[in-house]
Length: 394
Image 1 (cartoon, rainbow, N blue to C red):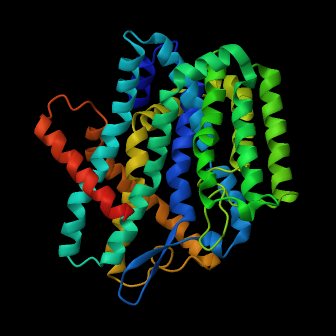
Image 2 (image 1 turned 180 degrees about the horizontal axis):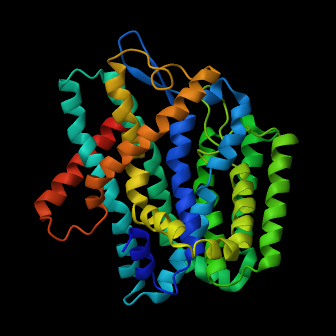
Image 3 (image 1 turned 120 degrees about the vertical axis):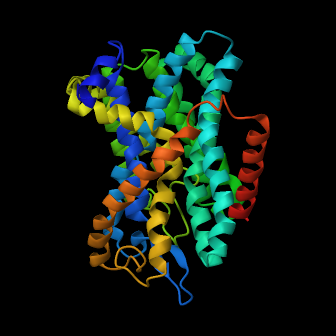
């Protein structure tokens, strides 16, 4: 029996294929976005430094609108969490500890491995600036895990909000982010402390998660989904055209403002439009994924979710760091400031994907419960991870 047929045979009849398909799409957008919108430059000493094609090509910004699919990820995360929450066998605390452990093990694994790699690579002659660049890239996607853990912990409260306010449960979160944006970008912005934007982190990412919880509670109907799609798209356009928000959904080196860290109102507008479209397309996508050949890769991606999130930057570095010793290579270690770089980077993407598959064969062990790992080894991994975090963030 072929792999696709075996996966099809093992899939429970009640499995929501559309939600899994949306999650897989959002997952694949993360490495694609980082690989395509992130580049390197090579200094005179042979060290690599971060660079972005968005600094040169403003027209490239709409690509980030497509690849910024964290709104979809939080939407389906909220939907799946509420179903899991209702099926829990033990206490809420036990359910939450299980969810956090599933998120924490892969993070602990990648940071512990990098803590060992840093001195080894340095001994092999890799420049310290290259190690700093690599550490930054490895840590960069891990903020998501911390935020996702926080919103997951709020699931019981999100359920209560959904039952009380229905489809409107996420509206106060949108209003909260809007107020903070007015304060930090409005006429009195100079009098506002620079740290105020931090207040947007939790409500900004909780917005789509709350929509997912309300969806899982069957409080969002077709009319609500249409309103999310149209209203989100209209707000997105207004913020860009009338209020001059940055056009890129990711940070651009040298720009004073960024939409993503912390999330601005533009991120929530995009998440609302994406969520509305996802809910409206759910049935059609579910029917499409009844085909075993399409369903099988969705299952594989979902099973490898944390591996993809934690290790995709390492895969790109596995190509770039050795290449830095060979000198400038178009699309890999040359500045992303020409159209030729874009074409060359597209040609490198299959190699990055292949390296991620190779790394994933060994790294997926971090995703599974460490039932045969001693307390001493777990403690050692924790110490190594903490050491790497200090190095990377310092």
